[in-house]
Image 1 (cartoon, helix red, strand yellow):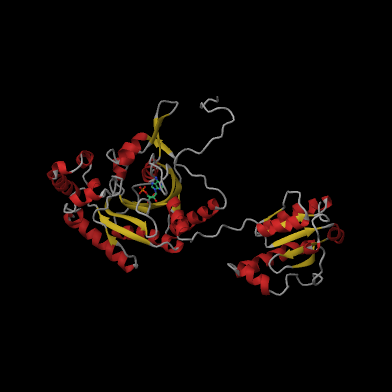
Image 2 (image 1 turned 60 degrees about the horizontal axis):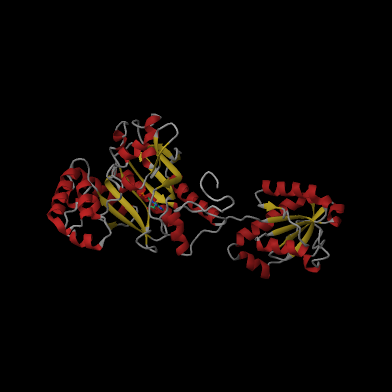
Length: 473
Ligand code: AMP
């Protein structure tokens, strides 16, 4: 047995509710993440990072003692120094804590973007994990409703850029003036239902009556169909704020669906509150992201007045939505040029060529495997290589290399110092034609890969003429 109680030599599995992203999906996921972060950058959000664990009290106070997240889902443990720490269940509380700590709040608008994991002890299922990844933006230091509209617009542009059909659910949760009054009205309505409500729902109502409204249970939904709604109880200031947000969203061409029962699971939201749902996913995992305004959060965790608004998008679910729609972006090219030293004497030249190709922005590598030439060519084709650089004895003797254009199926002998531009041109041509351009090139592109003065269509080594045995290194 080892220290963890597992029999020695038994295999380990990833912890329940976690995911291993393997190639090529991890690269695809990183592209989706970059798309999100790029929209944030275009809107003036600067990157920031905070630790993935914080003092437990930050979340208890910031996210809210009565939330499911704090009550049931936090990974909380005592560290070796006896402190209670928690793996962050969301990113906003840590963001606000850090900005307060470093004196960045209280002096105007701060716009920051994050990307990183969050942890919730949830029942794992498709799109619901115990470790998940969020991209998050926070705009703190302004109560202007135009900022709410702009924050939503940034998310809208993310989904538009990714080509995901989403519905924006939108509501207002009121503020410190009108919400307590509404909360009391709602609580009285729920108490009036008496025993008809299951006991755990009654307990939830006493703690946080708003959370009863967004319960998915059809029985509870039916019972509360006539419950008073926050939307009808907004104070004048909240009503005006809400009207302005909607007017501006309309001007920006962002559509929404009224969601008067939307609460979202985090207590800090007030006024504008929203969620994006993927049209192609089931209800259990269709919430791709959401957010809202959280004026008062800074003060709640010991900071200066700093009204803010933000959102978090779930990267894992967004990738799932793209996957289901068959619209995942392509993985970046992993190998564009394969350099083949066909004799031991060519190895030094090969390492330099690989270096120079990479410096020119071409993904280049050697095979590091013992194969026949035909085997190498097959492997190169399988890996999607656009060009193969062959370094045989004959080429070396002439200070040359043979560069094979895999799509055009032609090969030219060029001086060593022309290899990089020749390969770069092949890669650029394929890029121009992609996607599907490679096929087009293979069927009809004239064999013009050689640089001027490269000696025409010299064929140093034609792999199609080389049998497996003869080419074995
Ligand atoms: P929230 O922090 O609850 O506002 O969640 C924002 C987004 O993060 C959700 O819409 C999901 O896309 C994602 N998310 C939250 N919790 C999980 C989870 N347990 N597994 C996967 N994604 C999650």
